[in-house]
Length: 454
Image (cartoon, rainbow, N blue to C red; front, side, top):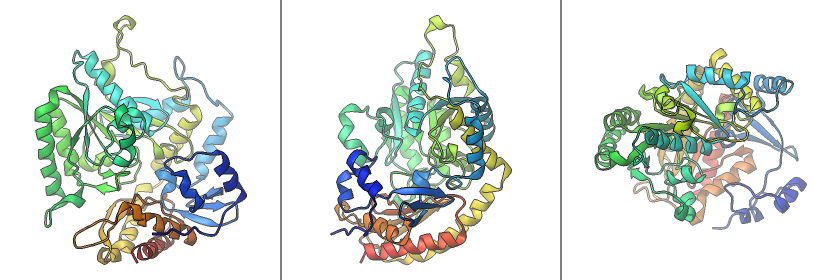
């Protein structure tokens, strides 16, 4: 299948391709796929150096919660730059780090009383994995060295985070460097039997997890999951009953629960945190992406007083958690995150999102009957369309046909950033998007799907 390039380029893109190596990209693709040179960003829109506008339907890798350059966050950043740019957080503190931690403790599920800062999502997962293992070591159980992850999970691309990731595209090359997790079958509702409800399927998958814990719990430090939506694995969604049962199993078998809400936190699934829909508190909560409203890199790991106490001892005991990043708790990033939480507190963000989610669901409804769509799924402000070769059998298109890329290129021609995950077309727009912009976004996606499947 040939892929035609949209007929536009720019001098900046030419300069870029001479020196920059881009993330998650086969650079050879840019011989035919345009490199967008972005000059401005505002609200839900990006503008390139030639004045073309693009609706950012994926919130720039799921980070820009309220859209680009939200005035309150921009003002907070400018104010902070007049005070402190950066100081190390070892042996020092500052108001943004303390105030943000206080607000995170208030906003997150009960029992998460301590905040550890890092730089990005993968680093947050590394912190949680190490902290869980180290906790058990400090408790005299050093053989608890293994982790359970879900099939199809994605937790990042540093060595530890990639080790608990089950997406072959990212994992296969580096497998000699990785430790092996125990994989529990995913509760992804797309995999359920005909006539089986998502809740019944989730409960059945909990039975599989119980069997795994029966065999291995004595050597397991933690179970790590993406609550409700397995994002980079294809926007796979599951029923909250799985989280409720998972919390009960972790308590029963005495293992930690790590909730990776890096992508799904801060209102994406309809509640501030996805764990709230199951009324559970994890032992570790990993946050990043939308934490700063899409302005600066920052992540946080929240954990319990019990975990914190296992590291609190005289220096000679050697119990300290000696993990650090040079920019840990950067004041400017913390100030942006502090303002992000203030916006949730001051404005009816979740209420507005519920109305936008309903509108999005209504606009997507016609795709349910599309001959090349096997599933239309949604969790709050995340929606996904499973594009297939055969609807009846759910037979997938061969990956080398790159049908999703055809949808992406059509989106560029029409002025919408759609960055599919393989043959899954998804939307994760900023919360400032309007109903009219949702209509346009879905219209362009449907056009792209029709063309890609023709």
